[in-house]
Image (cartoon, rainbow, N blue to C red):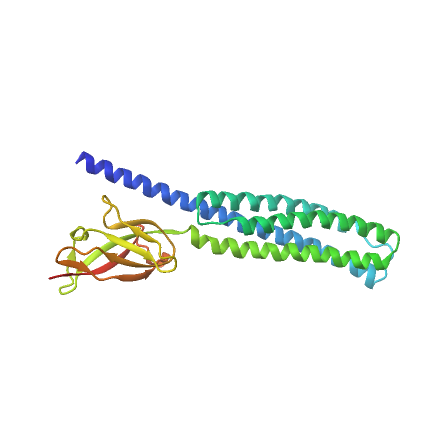
Length: 266
């Protein structure tokens, strides 16, 4: 009895630890998403200030537009963009450490490009101030176009990071599956231990997962996907296969998805 209690306790400990690790990865991806949204908002704020300045100078022909206000908005927002680019890199890196299925390289590359563009926005904005002070409208117009391009790139990359972070959450989600047998003739439940064991084959990758000696009827931490669940045949008995797409809507109150196989015997 003591041995059984220890095994159950160990299983529960691993189950809780795995669930906590999964939630930590999801939290990191949420932070990645939120940080990218901050970048998008701040880049749009600078873009709006740039539009106000360009309209006043180029459309209204005001020789002394309020460059100082634009520079102030730009400086504050680009500080935020730089900070949250680092946040994106940190959190996506943390998520990748917590789940080997997550490749952070695409998001990290985009965050680095956003941060690099931040430097160009600052440099070109300083040049814009000089051009306006010298009333060089042609140069100012060209610089405004360049700055707008850098800001648009930041906005686009931030949106792409959000999309990728959302997609990666599906890789971070894992499921626990329990096999149950029912007699194909009577529909009565049959103990899962009646058959030697079970396997789950990912239909996209062909990777095969197995139950183990102690948890003969359960699969823990299956990555999201569609699986074919099979039973190993006994001498005179076996079970049908079942194809199931793992989804949160299938998870029961105990944290498991139940897959039912139809048991047959000669």
